Figure 1: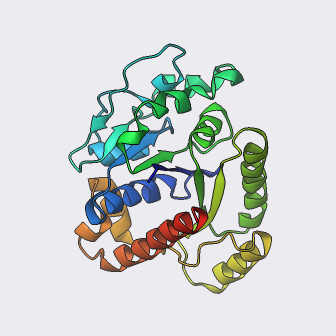
Figure 2 (figure 1 turned 135 degrees about the vertical axis):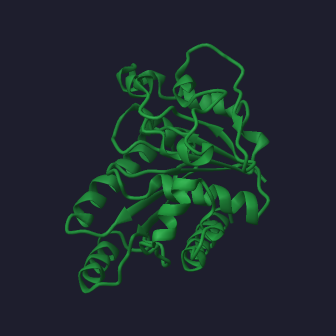
Length: 257
């Protein structure tokens, strides 16, 4: 079966892209025994920091995927068994990529194609802005997931986000499939329930049925670079992640039929 390539994208920051991306990587590697590559396209380097326990990554860096010449990709293998093409934290060169000519955005896909058959999953953590790196990530994948938080501006933000995704599908990557939005830090309050209803109305059939609540073990897991089920009091959060990830896998399986 071909490699499953998934981008985690939202033009807003702080919605949980890196957390969900890395926890899915842990889940697929440890629970499903899958071969996983994480590509950290975000110059903030949060996914990299989680997977390397705060150390600078070795091997090929994400900004090197924009090289015009062929080169030997060397992902870093982390102690969790997950391979990584990382970003140094707040690396200036990572931000400089946004100034590159638009015609170079297809290069990361070309380079990744040389190694992605070594994996069952390639997960790309996208930057929180519309630019070269986000477009490059969306060109390199078949599936895109959008973590969101519920707020007074949730619907407005989603409209712009999904307009961008459909535009990329229509004009740049016809194979792109939008799996939907994962609600993060859901608190079951009346305000969140109203916002969730509005989101479901705005993008019917595209909101995941399972949600993630804000739980302190998730923050702990992120800081120590561990699956949430391995940290103290992480059981409830782990069950929520499992439900979301199994739903994600089911969506991919359904799309392949």
